[in-house]
Image 1 (cartoon, rainbow, N blue to C red):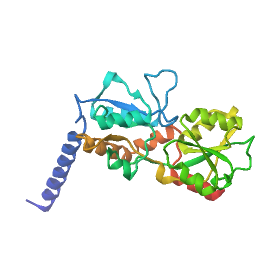
Image 2 (image 1 turned 30 degrees about the horizontal axis):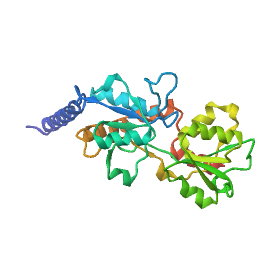
Image 3 (image 1 turned 180 degrees about the vertical axis):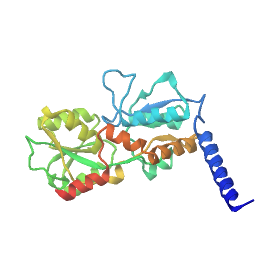
Image 4 (image 1 turned 90 degrees about the horizontal axis):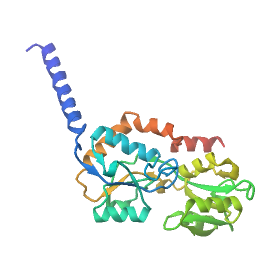
Length: 269
């Protein structure tokens, strides 16, 4: 065989291997039925608007793209909203396949659950009232102030470090209205839903600080049962969505800021 023919044969072999790999992944979960739960952490990651049977958001769109590529079906053809603790309890019981909606990856959680690749990194943010506390510019300005945090999160570490007085809450929306009314001086929470709430509710006169902190608490991934039999194929497909620009396109659709862009903006300030 001439050297030209050898090259052609090698290229054909590589092409066949690639096609074989793609065909193995594409549609691999056909006839598999999944129970998917979204923690409605708030727009744009996962939220409920008019219809409780039709959650919306960045994470929801990712699931539908996974479904388009892998051909699985959804229980009752929908994604179910469920509070955080209850959703993870279902993972432990084996009655949930995916939990989405602003779920942060941590090493402690990885000991109990499987996770997809981290598909979006952000940070925490301070939300404050421009009317009641215009002097707040960063987390360092919280000394002596009443600062709300979601019960059970690590936000207390940052509040303690700045000398603020932590006030736990269970309902983020109610806590935001308390900040607007001056009943809370500020709150610390994941930046994506906070930035979106402030953007879409200008009448409340709230603002989000531009400092970057708490990145380790905002590495978002989907959770699955430990040693889940579909972890490999879901993770491969998620990685392909990151590599082919699908995730970036969804980030733009939902006005989500990349961590590098936030750092660049902070440097300019």
